[in-house]
Length: 136
Image 1 (cartoon, rainbow, N blue to C red):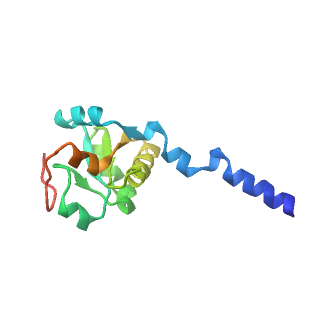
Image 2 (cartoon, one colour; image 1 turned 30 degrees about the vertical axis):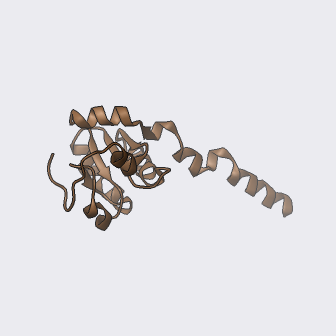
Image 3 (cartoon, rainbow, N blue to C red; image 1 turned 45 degrees about the horizontal axis):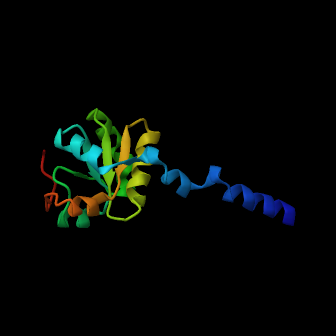
């Protein structure tokens, strides 16, 4: 029994089963310069995965509010736009936005999480839009 439990623990602790390792993948990230060039050229859909109340207090202009819990429900709409998706949140590790990008990628979308997220946007002195999203 102890051997069985040890084997199970080793399997669950292995990198193949580590969601944190998968979420840290560079395949789920987009750097600031690449994002900004694509954003300025209106070549990406920007998705804010923070809660709606936080979104209304300030967000990247033109961003869509799709809280993390609602990402799967927005897949059809995002696919219709036929553009890459950049997700962002306000956590330093981009954990929530990486989870959203991972979900979108698993459904066939080209999606990446913005490195640095909303805090990076603010650090770079990006304009802030408040309230409900406006069309870009």
